[in-house]
Length: 153
Image 1: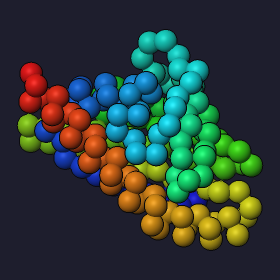
Image 2 (image 1 turned 30 degrees about the vertical axis):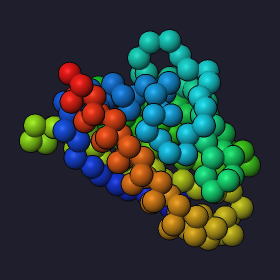
Image 3 (image 1 turned 180 degrees about the vertical axis):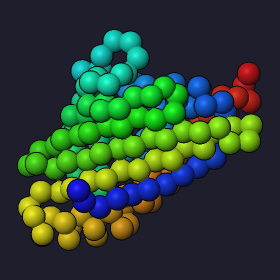
């Protein structure tokens, strides 16, 4: 499809706790650095076919994405497909697996900006710096959030 950002992190928390947090759209603001708002969130747990809207901001540029869960295998695997203005597309993959006393969380974001070859070139430049950096920052926030929650128990 397009350019890919891929990151992994070890989190000292049970797989079920990691899953609960990452699959709750209302909690995206707690760990996703570019998140601004979420709307049209369905009641209950997300499942295949669930949809919602997310507003983000990357490098000062607002981005509104309509997400759909395309695969959901609790608590190990989720896939999302998103569309935004002007034909931009994104796919998100979450893969979780037990690791020692915690969880390994593998995250992948594949995106395609509109405008053909020019859009792909712009996307590579955008991805090279911002996408990778923001993914690392978001996963670090996720780890901190979950591990600090475990300390509070």
